Length: 88
Image (tube, rainbow, N blue to C red):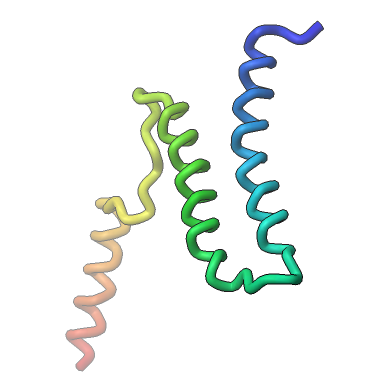
């Protein structure tokens, strides 16, 4: 038996996947130019996917940031930089 949570998930997936299905159907047209439709459709897909992702994100969950500094790595990098500069 499908639970209420699973029904909610199915509804969310249907909404997201229908955006992809609509874009696919529109872009496969052979009797009209579809190139100009690519960017607006891609933006709609991005908006749909990112909106759903943002609303479902746990506020207490910390995302890893590739640009966050790591003190140990910075110390190691500055040591290497100093060695290179001293050799010049």
